[in-house]
Length: 367
Image 1 (tube, helix red, strand yellow):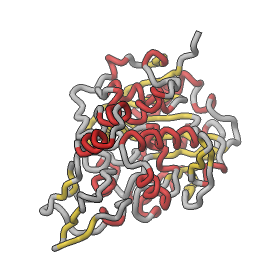
Image 2 (cartoon, rainbow, N blue to C red):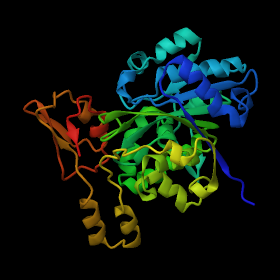
Image 3 (cartoon, rainbow, N blue to C red):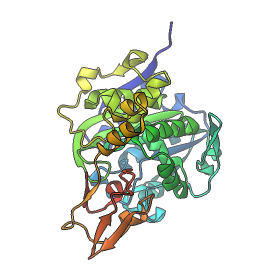
């Protein structure tokens, strides 16, 4: 009989300590609490989503109150706890400060890890340029945020491991894997290389619409957890109303027949799917749809070009654009210029990776 992956769901109405701690204790109960995941004296890395320097109330990053509560639980179990990530852009110190992580470290004694030096791990014979700091810890706890993403559909546990890639390599990987399907397969490879020992999704307040930065914060009141990032994302996608084909990482996992890529592979603990279902969650603009699947089945050159043209282009709202050049700095093919004080995208050379939309601090890039 096939062994099922366990995914735990718990209600958590707010980030207040009196709500978080009991919710986390319930969430971790199937594994014997934090002490069931590590041994005393081991090193634990909490890897949050620290996309950019955004304050907690914007729901762009993992909430500092959740990270603080997790630090305390693992410290109580005897662990030495670290916090680390490679943000999408900006000074790491500023990102840590604005997101509240420096204050968490100050209050709890958790140590900050830098992901600036690249090591590497092999997946299917390919070297993935991961942060060397991962080699210094015994357990990676992947603390993701439930948000929409135009390229991958859903950014949750699997996608969150992209932050373990040292920053200077991220643009290259986008260039080498420009389509949603190829990038989804890359993200799955990265997750398998990181091999997080435990995964938590912060869905107390998630993000809907045009995430992962400029969508709308959406109160959901949930926490999800499990040892399998794929299984946790499968449940998150189901409760948010995503079709499997809309989430590139899960489509890749299904093709590889990985455990947890189907709800039939999963045993739920705590809430049922119906109890956790998110009503009318706005999934935003999803680039993937069925296009990549059709391209895979009909790899004729003109058909491939036709379907690729169906994917949405990023568009700059010149009234909202401040000409800050952040989009240009983070554009992998370097096809954005500033003209008359606003960004201009060369559509002929745009690979539609949507990094500009993801990193714009003013919401001026739309799909």
